[in-house]
Length: 367
Image (cartoon, rainbow, N blue to C red; front, side):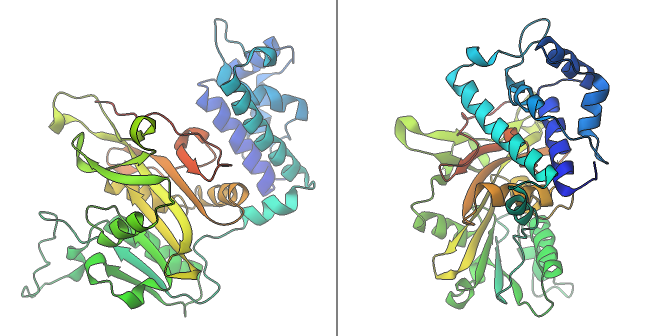
């Protein structure tokens, strides 16, 4: 079939499900064949290929929806009748997603809604703005060497933190919109009342961005909190719930001897959009993280050309009212941030509102 956006998105999702299960195409074919549905490795390859993929037959969607249950030796799928309650919920969610993608690839009834979702652009502002990006002040010991205004080489940006995220986002917003759109960025310490009534974008966490700290405290209905903890001195973690029901989300570190030798392998990012509490006709967007890598990951979720279209479609499908919040895993490789792929359900640690696709996961920290 033609390489339509729906067909490509389906092919990408099938490959992601297989890789999450740790299977090769040949292993997947063998497992499906054991399940009573004869499949060849060539067929699996044809469903997954990025150019002109073959449409997955509808009767193959259920085995894919049960891939998280693969177990045993030889590997087999858990039969539908023996699934646990959690496995049944996961299967139903995956089957719904796959059915919608198959329908989209065929141009069926769901195609119009999903096509609209695929064309959604979070950083396009048709109302003319303004857009104000609030950036953290660099903390003590993190101010650049040219921040001294008496220095002939004074550079104002040496006073800012999370510059990777600011440069990525500011450039993307300018590219997405009419050149007349007013886009500003300001240090958190320099924000005044007039800066808060447009589309407001908060970069960074509560330690260095006082505006983020205040608004997270004010938006009491948001289920996610960012808190300081003695468990982590390099950043502030995210938590959901209280007391015995509290769940904490921490970064993942490489195994190493001693604190100084370990390397950040996975950060946590918060990406949320709600109505601006100071002007309900405008938006408030949070691009936050435990560390700067998490902040950049939250930004790149909707700016990186490799994943943004699929991520936009995901958000539009799951949150049709336009308000959402996600805690996401942000992989880090040799200090480089890897943009999160929201089509991969394992990248979502927590989501709201209730119809969000992922449940809260347990606190996780290694090293």
